[in-house]
Length: 325
Ligand code: ATP
Ligand code: BTN
Image (cartoon, rainbow, N blue to C red):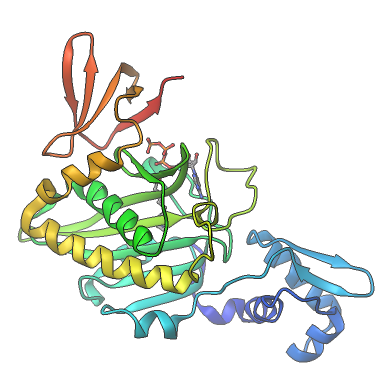
């Protein structure tokens, strides 16, 4: 497990802060500012590059980021939010952090990070989480209606994310059943709902989202087409902190509505946003593969598939949807 203590990464974070303006900074100058040698700076720069930040060095000029970083600002985020927010520069996984601390936090608490060393997707898959380029965002939620009601939660949260981003000016966002946001047929964000415990009928859930904003090429972990939010906005993209504030408020509102009405209030909107409506798709269920035409979701949040046998419904966490070429 990665150590979440900020002190451990203090020097690297201070270097990133200096470089975040996008200008050149000499190794010597950085060393003087931080009270360490040029050699130590060079070592830290290597560590920073391992976090996925693109830094290059030009002889006689020093170090420069390939593009400026818009760092998350906790003061701005907290002052615009109605729930407690924790920001970590480096963490193993924001979902894991909240799962480990639910007894000490009120429902609605949020954890965000600039970098995840062990970001995860469904079924233990890796979530690429380079420093400073995307959002890694988790919220703890006590679902009074219990775990049986949690089935459609990733669908309702998908709607919340699209609505929050549209409120900021985004267009063309779509959803893929059961847990992804799509833009131009590429994966823009993923949602991961995990349960810590159930006490007296209340489900203690952590809902996480990874949203790509301006991620550079990732050759290692992503084996499918993916998109960035900066491709979605035609004009200026809001700051990452503004996006976090909009997401927090949208999630809270949707979770409260979900608590009272379940999927009912979201089905129609979800179906409007369905990326695969009336398109040929296949469902992967274990070793089984079922082909058909996507027909959106039903009132329970199950996926509807028109097959040769007629209209079929599938519901459950172990199903993957794929497009048929
Ligand atoms: P499923 O339909 O089963 O959910 P999926 O391929 O979307 O399929 P997930 O577990 O939801 O699988 O997401 C993890 C997958 O997402 C990884 O296997 C990888 O291919 C991809 N991935 C990892 N990091 C990112 C990222 N930052 N942006 C987009 N896609 C990513
Ligand atoms: C998926 O598509 O499978 C879901 C990806 C979820 C990634 C987010 S990033 C914040 C939170 N912390 C994690 O480790 N995972 C989720």
